[in-house]
Structures are given as structure tokens and as C-alpha cells.
Amino acid sequence: MAGYRITKVGTLYDGWRKVLGFTVRKSDGETMEREIVESDDVAAVLPYDPQRRTVVLVRQFRVPVMHIEAKPDILEVIAGLLEGDEPEACARREAMEEAGLRLGTLEPVGRTWSTPGAMTERLNLFLAPYTAADRVAEGGGLAEEHEDIEVLEIGCGELARMLERNALTDLKTLALTQALRIRHPELFETA
Image 1 (cartoon, rainbow, N blue to C red):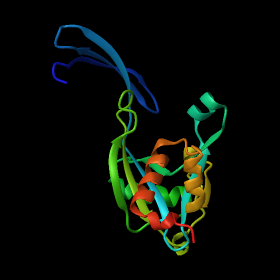
Image 2 (cartoon, rainbow, N blue to C red):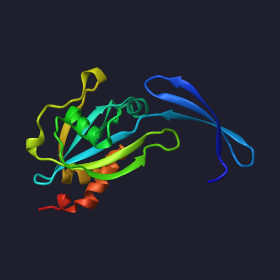
Image 3 (cartoon, rainbow, N blue to C red):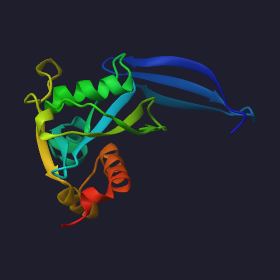
């Protein structure tokens, strides 16, 4: 859409994340105000074991989930802020921190905007094969980041049932589950 121009940017809040205020001028001269949250990009990965037909997901506390749904946690794929790393390095780092999982091969799924109407954050999505031998540590997250992560290994059949019941409520988890079903349908076949 041609004709939009940012004429003013200001910092409204600078804390864990930054909130910016924008004045945008349209081609007809009208202006509008918008606020966005500035965030680092994220890497998210869904590890899957092709032999045992399982995936690794994590359950952790999320303030927005508690605020809106009065639930203390959400089931989701492993993810974290890039913090200056390349997306692949971040996916591997987060898999080790959150799930104690050493990842080798990463299968890129895509790079998407998480919430383009409100945030600068982009998600770098990956699938990653693993074996039981790749579980080299306990995981659980970093104490200094106040993470209290529960690591879950779930069968692909159960994951498919969760998808069908609309039980996957995190968008990156939903997208990566669908990508896994499309790219590796044999994991979901019943014996």
C-alpha cells in the first residue's frame, strides 16, 4: 500500500521490551497514531524422534495466559529470543536449556511475523529430528530467567489428537505441528 509514511517515532516505555509510538501520515494527509512492542526475533523448534514417533514439547508459565485464561501455563514448542545469535544457533541453545536436548540437523520451515499489527518480532521456525541418545541433560530452563519448564515427550498420535481437539493454543506450536504432519506424514500413521 503506497502512500503511508512514518513521520514521528518515540519511546513510550523502555523495560524488558520497548514500546514505541508512531505517527503515520497517509497519502491523503490524514495522520494516525500507533503503538508497537519492539522485540528481538525468535527461534522456535519442534524436535521429533522418527523411530519412536514422538515429539518434545514444553510447558511453562506465561503471564498473558494467566491474565486472560486464569491458567498458569501453556504447552508449546521450544523457543527463545535470538539474543544476537543466528536462528539455528538459538534453536540449538534453547533446545539444550529448555529440554536438555542436543540437536543436530534443523529443517527450516519459515520465517513469519508473530503479531504484525503490534510487534516487530519474527519467528524462525524449525523441525529437528532427535533420538533418545540426544537427551543429554535435564533441561527445565534457566533459573536466572525464572524459567520453570516441564519437558514432555508426546507421541505423534496424541499430538494429532490434540490438534483435532483444538488443544494446541500456541500459534508457533500449531504451525510446526502442521508442518510436521505435511513433511513427515509417516510419523502420524497408525500401525
